[in-house]
Length: 317
Length: 289
Image 1 (cartoon, chains in turn cyan, purple):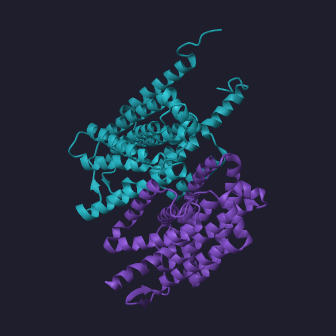
Image 2 (cartoon, each protein chain N blue to C red):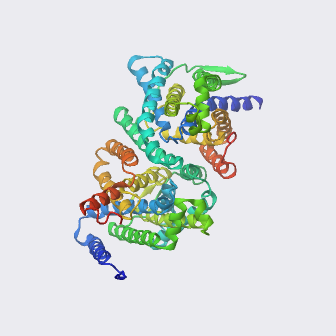
Image 3 (cartoon, rainbow over the protein chains, first blue to last red):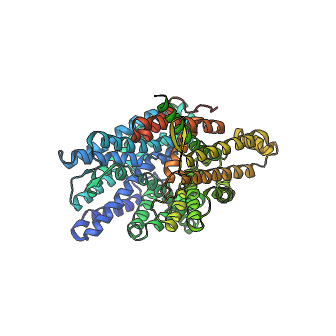
């Protein structure tokens, strides 16, 4: 019997492809059009939102609708601190503020089972939106504020960095003891607790880590809008879209949420200005079909095809 | 002072009646059929806009909208449960997984219904005037249309309570709410009862939409706000308790009216604060098990 090599040939090839892809993406602003840069920044944003959602909700099975709240926190951090502080600090603050909120909310509510948690995260978004609206109208007397403008390639590189960090985190999480424990919680929480996993701590910290990237993405993407108000910043769609993208793509593999995010981000880009209603209609139809007919998503479907094409040789992998 | 208190209380009851009907519909869908229907508000929107459209096109009395919207929404809801949710129940395996999946499917429905409505009706704010003359109650003035709304809300609530408490089908619904598996063994046609509950929930939403359209403007994006309120009331009354939702609706209406008196921008914030504390301190609600 051969010993398994430390790095298999398969993962070496995958690694090379990833590296080449990364180099192509990293040099894009030099040869690509401005349109491509902007489009890809949006795609990156959706990848971060979707993957962050999947990092927590994938293994635990607890559906969070707080993505938009964390994203909004990032946006508001950029709107309030953007003029005084350097960009990097603003982005870090945005991420940390979102993570702190996730920690707080998580430690309060992650004991809640199933639907209660979803309802709560949904309420959180609305609570923050209306509280901020009330605060702005009552105390500052204005609604909304201006955000510092940053050039396209800076946004692009920042988003690329955040995407890579999110992917890396998601990958490491899946491979680590931490990720396995999280998986165990999702399978059966009580059993996980009995074998000595600190369920609450693990869930809360994963939730906070996933929020970190969303907040950071919010802080940098805010600079694209130039003007934000609570309705723009705390838009419910940023909670719904990642859920659909992840489920459509498939939660079983790392590539699933990325695939879902890329497809829908591109669809949105070409459809939303001309046919906004039809885009959202399509969105809903795909959602229903994915939930009913594609339990393991597009990635699961691809894997099925591949294993069938290989004559079932790798069917178990 | 006394007039002010009376003012707040009556306004709260008027608002609460509406909330009660909306929440009872969701309570049926979630408490019995186990579908946390995020698209609940979209059925409200459909009811409101259909009533408006019938009035605008043919000059039909809004109250007749009840006869059209209620049964139409019932059939739609019944059909949806029979096809979509029943299939999900079969494929999901455990009730916990079904709750998650059915909620996700209702997200999809939300987008489908809302955008179909947007394609048909556009996003502008619509309204009509019906029974808009003031009525004097102990010195406080209220629109007659809002009193009619309260009357219908009470009527729907009481009729439904009698249906649940006195009829055979009502008993079957209560049994299914308690324990669907055992109720099935006792000879209750579970898949029919669940579809019936889902349909009734949709019908209540549509009727509420018709009542809303008599006193408030209607538009295609109005649904989400009411969905949120319905969820809050259902949690307040206790998930699965239909009388709880009815009472919870009036309580939330009174709170809303009280907060609006001091600062109208804070009403929704107050709802969420209550909701947050409720989930943290007593997630079973007022009348939950």
